[in-house]
Amino acid sequence: MVSIDDRRMLLTSKEAAERLAISERKLWQLTKDCDIPAVRIGRAVRYDPRDLIEWVERCKAPPAVDS
Image 1 (spheres, rainbow, N blue to C red):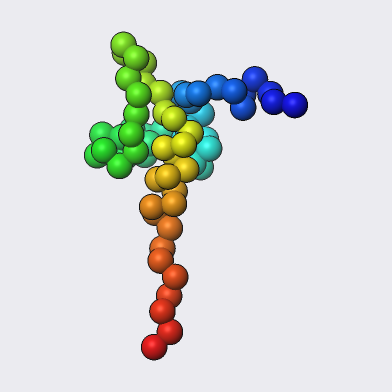
Image 2 (tube, rainbow, N blue to C red):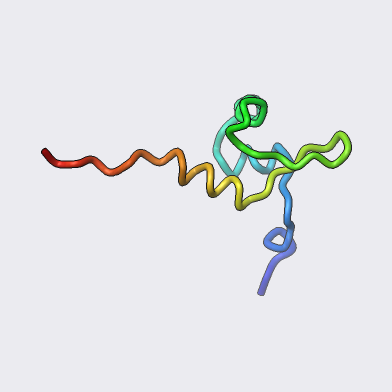
């Protein structure tokens, strides 16, 4: 069964920060620096969970290469 939260397309800044385990202030800085895309609807700023997942994947360190 799909819960209501699973069907939501966009997250608030508070929800996005909680999912990333970072502060809202850090999230705003990452958004301002264009590291994490945001959706603006009027004055509201929302985040697509898929963008958050992509950002996490980009931030992962590459595997170490044995020499």
